Length: 226
Length: 333
Image 1 (tube, chains in turn yellow, purple):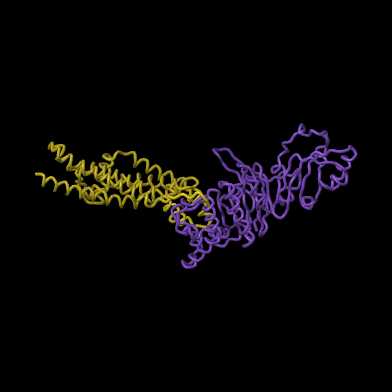
Image 2: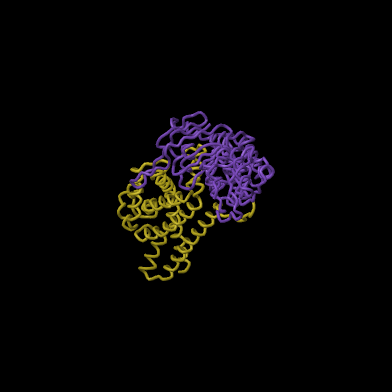
C-alpha cells in the first residue's frame, strides 16, 4: 500500500505541475501585455486612452471578482471549444488561465507603477521612443517585482488547480478529494497537503531568489565619500 | 540658443485651473550659464520642462537650436531632444543598469554602433572621474557620484545644451561645489550652454552668468548676475542680501551709520583708508561681506562713521559722489 500511495502521489503531482506550468506560461504571455496596456492607457500614461483603459479595467475587475469554482463552470463552452472536452488536466488549464490573467495583469500593472516616473521622464528627455521606454526602462526596472508577482500568481494557480482537480481535472486536488476525503484515507490527504505545501514553498523561494538576483537597488557597500 | 516667448502653462486640477507659468520669456545665448532662481512652487520645474517639451506650454513659443519645437512632429521632436541633455535633482539613473549601461543608453537611442558606444562611454566616465565605477550599479554610488554619472549620460550624445533641474539640491555643500565646478569646466571646455533652475543663491553666484528670478509663475527680473547683485533694489540683491541684522542700537558712538554697496572697480579701491586720510574720520566696521562672483567681486559693508560733524558730512558727500551709497542708506539714524 505505501508503495502504491507514493506512486499515485507522484502521478498526480506531475499532473498538477503540468497544469500549473502550462497555465503559468500562458498567463505570463497574456498578463504582461495586459498590465503594460493598463499602465500606458491610464491618465498621464505614455499612450493615454481613457476609454480603452476603462474597458480593460472593467474586464480585470470582473475577472477577479468571479469565484474560481463558478468561473470554471461558467466557461465550460469555451473549454469544450478549445480542448474538445471539459474533463482532464488539459481541459483544466483553460479556466486556470482565464482566472489568472486578470490577476497577472494587475500584478504587472502594480510593478510598473512602482517604477520612479523620473526614470521615464529621463528616458523621454533623451529622445527614446515609447517602445524603448517600455522595453529598456519600465520592464527592466520593474523586473524584481514582476518576478515576485509571478511567484504569487503561480502559488494561486497551484491553489486553483487543486480546486479544478476536485471537479474532474486530475492532480493533487483530485486525489485528495477522491481518496483522502471520500475514502477516509488520512495518509493520502496528508501526503497531498505535504506536496502542495512543498510546491508553494519552492515557488516562493525561487521567486524571492530570482527577484533579489535582479534587484540592484540596495547599496551593499555604501561609500561615505565622493 | 534657447528662446522662450510668452510661455504660459495652465494645469487643470479637479475642475479648477491652476496657472503655473504666466507669460514667461527668456533668451539663453550660446555658451552661457543661465540660472532661473525661485522658491519651490514658483514654476521653475515647469519652466525647464517646457524647454524640451516634457511639458507642453499652453501658450507661447519654444525655440531651441534654431528649431520651433512646438511645430515638430513627434519623430522630429525625439531627434531634437537628443541634442538637449538633462540632469535631475534625484539623478534619475536606471537602477537596473550599470553605470556604463546608463551612460550608453542615449547612445543606443541615437543608434551608434556598439564599438563607438564603448569608446565614448569610457571617454565620458574618464571625463567625470568615474572610470573605475563602470560596472557598478548606481545604488552603490554616493550622491555626488550619481550626479556625475547623470552628467556623463546627459553629455554622451554631445548635446550643445544642458538643462539642469535642481541638480545640486540634494547634495551636501562640498559635493555641490565639486559638481558646480564640473559644470563650469564643461561650460568652458566644451562651450556647453547651460540652463539651470535652482532655489539656491549659492548656485547662481557660483556659476551663472545670467539669472532670471521667477516668482509665482512670473519672471520678475532678468539680467547679468554681477550687475543685479551690485544694484541695491534689484530682486536678486534683495534675495542675496537681506537687511543687515545690526540695528540702530548698535550705533554706539553717536556717529553716522553708512551702508556701502561694493562692486566693479569700487570693490578693489581702498575706500576706508581714503576716507580716513582725506576727511579725518574713523570707520567702525559693523557688518558686511565681499565675495567673488564669476570674474567680479561684489559685496556690501555696514559701518559707523565718527569724527567732527563737518568732516563726517563731507565724507558722506564724497561717498555719494562716488556712487557708493544710496541716499536711503546714508540717512542719519
